[in-house]
Length: 217
Image: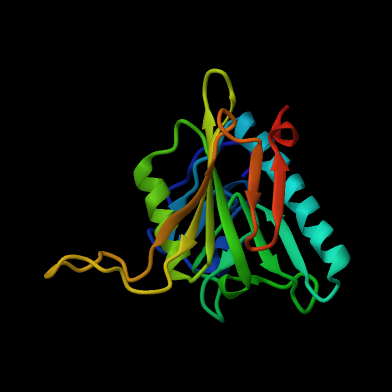
């Protein structure tokens, strides 16, 4: 997502991964495929890239700290890495701003949703709620246990709030006659604000301790 914004060409509504690969990189890097449908990804401002990098660095530190004492456990923390849905095929994928997944068997292996423990998005003030919810639904449908939202403030710039959502593993209990719109959903499990907390602290998917000072620039 750090690639510069370029003029969007006239593309078909649906494409395959193989067709996407034939496009110039500056175009292909702006596209996700949702069940083959072309979805253009909004590029964030500099602050978006900066806070994504800071959070990646802190999450990576936490993962390495745990792994150093438990070598049998292995995770990778990624920035803007494609996550492919299903066990085969590549024409259905999203690109979270950051993610945590289990170490894979070989180098350069595709990351599948089944391997992902946490997917996260850094949300600038320009992000629309509809876009946010649409992507969150896809993460939930794929069974990714944790979804994080990092909301940025405009003035002054900085992190406004970080929210951690846990996947609901049982059916929602609603009033008689009402059915949930989606079979799976996320429930807000934790929330951290610089104005009210010392930093981010949570035990899942592994112990994470990030003071706000690590996320300043």
